[in-house]
Length: 319
Image (cartoon, rainbow, N blue to C red; front, side):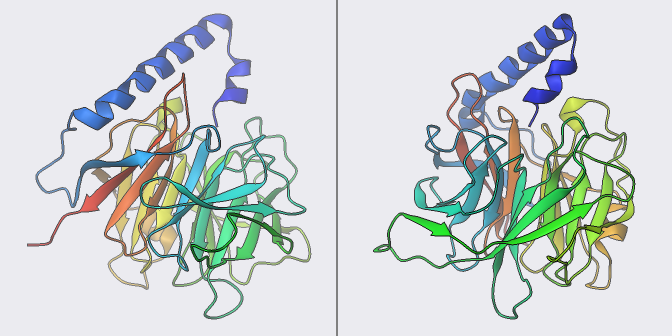
C-alpha cells in the first residue's frame, strides 16, 4: 500500500506521485492490447487477460495465492482498512466464496500464501498483516487457518471462527513488508521487507509459535538495489514444488530457480534473478503461481476508476 506513505511528501512531491500513478493507470488499456518486449528465451508468455474482478468488493487487492483444495481458484483480499475477509475467485476473476475471519483485524493485510502447516496432509491459508508504512508497529501478525473446500451448492459466504495467530517482532526493529511466502519443502515462513535500500529476508522457522510473541530471524538481504518507490518489493510466491520463486516490484517481476532442494531460500535470493514479462498495472501488488505451476497470475488495486483485471503469464512449452 502506498497511500499513507505519501502523507510525508511535500505538496510538489505529492503532485509528481499522483501524476506517475495516473500514467501507470492509463496503461491498464495498454495491458490488454499492446505486447511487452519479451526476450526470446523467456520461459513465460505475454500476459493473458483472464477477466475483470468486481471492484466494488475487491478494490485494493494486495495479495493472491493459489487454492490447493479448490484447484484452479485463487484466494485474495483487500488492503488496510478493508473487511477481515478472504475472497475465493475463479480463473476468470469471478468471486466464488467469501470467508469472514472472526476475531481478526485487517490492520494492513499485504499478502497471502497457501501451503502446508502443522497438520500433515492439510493445506493452510496464511494471511499477512505485516504492512507498516511508518515503521511504528511493535509486532506484526500472520493469520493461519485450514483451507476449506467448497462445492457449487455451498453458501457463498461463511465465517471462520478459529484462526491461529502467529505474532512476531523483527530482530532489527519495526519494518514495512508486503511479501509473505511459504516454503512447501520446509514449511518455513519467509518475509521480504519493502522500505530498505536492499530488501531484507526474514524467516520464521517451522513450527511457528502461536502461544506467544517471538522474534523471527534475519537471514540476509537481496542484492537488488531499491532506487525508488516503484522498485520496492511488494509481493512474492514460491512454486507448488518449492523450486521457483517470484518477487515483484511495482514495475518488474524477478525469478529464481533452485538447483536442488538443498539450496536455501536465502542463498537462492542472493543469486542474480531473471527478469520476467510484466505489463505494469495501476498499483499492482499481487502475484502468485497457479496450482499446477504452469504460470503466474497478477492482480492490481483499483486506481483512478480503473477496473482490476486478473492476468496470467503462461509457462512456455519446453523444447
